[in-house]
Image (cartoon, rainbow, N blue to C red):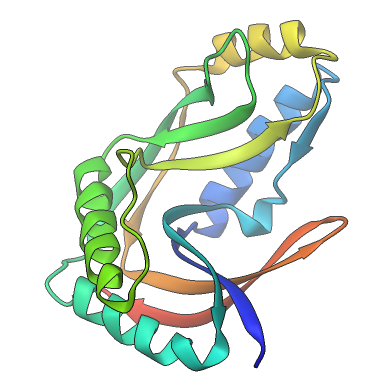
Length: 188
């Protein structure tokens, strides 16, 4: 039986994707060795599940639906350009959630705990709502990248209303991952 690499996410509006694409353009001026996420694929991962059998998808969607049934729509704003492990030695470049942070954390926690009923392990580390912009591949241009990130660190990247979460499929290709919405589940 075929498997699909699966995760649960909040996708971004076109306006936010454009704003984040503009920041990526600014950061590219550092000429650092970064694999940038294509703007159309930008999202906040609430739960990465991994490879699942296609036959399991309906059960996963049902659990996510149960997890979101008590969740109201909420406002989300993106700010705080940062990096893991830190700005001076970036490996993952990301933008944090400001407004809506607690709602994202609670939603992620409910989904995580409920998916455990299907045998998926609960995350051992705390959830930090964020959106990945790129992954640093080598130290080439890293100092210049760190300087640019420090300058843009407090910028705001937009606000949106979160009205749904999506069960997403991910296909890995040499050019990067391609995402497909398998099911959109509305918040109330």
